[in-house]
Length: 126
Image (cartoon, rainbow, N blue to C red; front, side, top):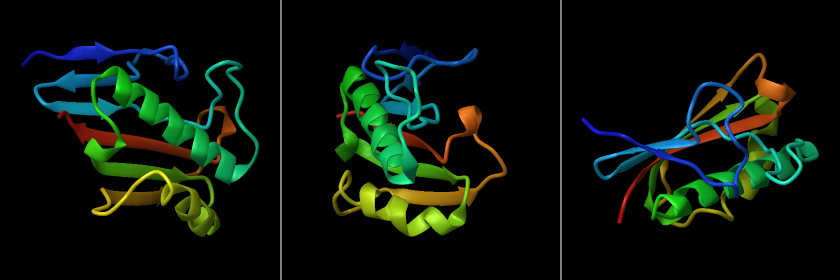
């Protein structure tokens, strides 16, 4: 199995020993994306802005890999507080169209950089 590292400056760089994404065959697996602004490296303010930025980061990574959000088949959303579920959905629904990707949402004790939301995606290339 061969795998190719995907990297773009249009999304925050990895903050540990991992890739922004890896492509293997026709599949792209993104690492979890926080609501980090790629220009400043700072978290955006509030759960909706962090969701918007995390999804924009995923979009940039997928575009670097030759795909788009339309190619996403599965996402996992990690929430600091499940009470933010509706607010995250409000933003999430502006990035995806039907048929929506499969999705899991999980409340976690803590996220890197004390983020409020982290999202990862699996996409199939064109």
